[in-house]
Image 1 (cartoon, rainbow, N blue to C red):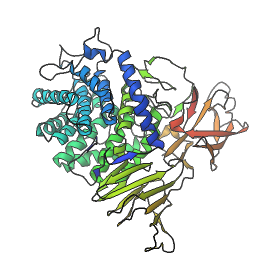
Image 2 (spheres, rainbow, N blue to C red):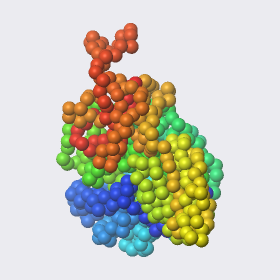
Image 3 (tube, rainbow, N blue to C red):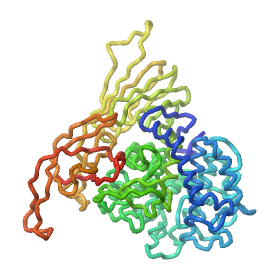
Image 4 (tube, rainbow, N blue to C red):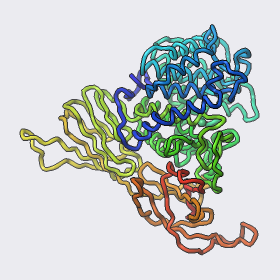
Length: 609
Ligand SMILES: [Zn+2]
């Protein structure tokens, strides 16, 4: 089964790359661009920056202490994409492996001297994930040999003791290696890494131990905190351990931490991480739009976690957050040409960025960059898009459950269906049965789709003429099911309401009071101002129904705003709630994931009303 996550049990069983094929469409096009452009782009930059040369022993060593992990994430992307460059790159990596399985181009010679910041186990985690991808897509080869030797080295070195890594990821990697090899030691090693955390296992640091989730045992925590990517990778590994060891208490702990985090610490886009200083979550309701950090990797990590929880529980709310994060974080992360990337994803940018040709030395910036000193995000986008079919649908008994409505072909057991849709631009989805078969077909109705309908249209034939017409019934958010048997040509037609809607923030989010945002379907919209378009700093928006405009196959929106904040007299506070009364303008709103593709711009999701 060609799948990044393959639990031994759970309410749903995943369907992998061998069961789901993306067709041209919103995600199929992005996956194709990733395969054809982004993977090669990442490899070129890793070579240019010397990070691949590190494995050949080139000196001086270049890149940050965790740069090996970027090559491993790229190898994982190549494995899912069955990329022809993989064997040669794996051979280069193998040169750096030592006799006992140790491999790290930064710490060779001074092994395991810095668990807080050294990232050695983190790098193994990504190597093992690449190895698992290769095992499932292809079978044993040089890459899987290197990964398994490294994993065995970790088990020998760390099975006893109290140590763990300042950056989680090895936990989920080891569980997945257990799932593919059935060697118990990998699961036991992952379980011990999870249980050691918070005892504590790591040193105190200026950010505090919460930064790397070492402030509390994972079972005692109430909410995700600290560095967002670390928190979400750890939680993903904890779910994996909980599922494999049938530890319901541990699973419930992560479910309730997820619930509170989603309710109080998540941006409208699905982005997580409010603080730039330590790339961390803020306190409950600390969700400033302009200072939002929302690392692209945290969005991807949130998708990884929600996917695991969805498989374990079958609860549609996990697919809802995944969809929000796919369309408003993952799709935002890469430019339309697949060659530049966002690291931070704020919801307001006040000053247009200055274009940059080379490496971005910071995570910030109002324009996508071709590469970063820390290039976790581009490689993470590459591996996620390469494995994206695995997130689209799942199996439930002999049935198919379609989580994400995107053009695709899905096969499971005796069922084969083709999904055709212009989603997210239109709300019409057709699921056509390709061969006679049995089993239930389920379609996810998103949480925002309060008046959706589903039509069952049996194929017409002389011996079974179509009755009076298809049966159309209203369906509620969650999963709408229709049971077989099916005949080739049978069709399900889902209609989702795509009217743009105004969205208002919880009043406890102080930074958003007095503003509203516009969403349509799964997409968050934003006002973007380039060149001589109206400035976005001093406007008041009317909460009237937005007007739709189709522009080059994309649905844009228009709302009315009043420009001008008035003169504040040299002091931006006063005894009255004053605002200027300028001219009415039509304010153009574009999907948030498309912003920043027209050159330097200011942008805001939340509009003052
Ligand atoms: Zn990142």
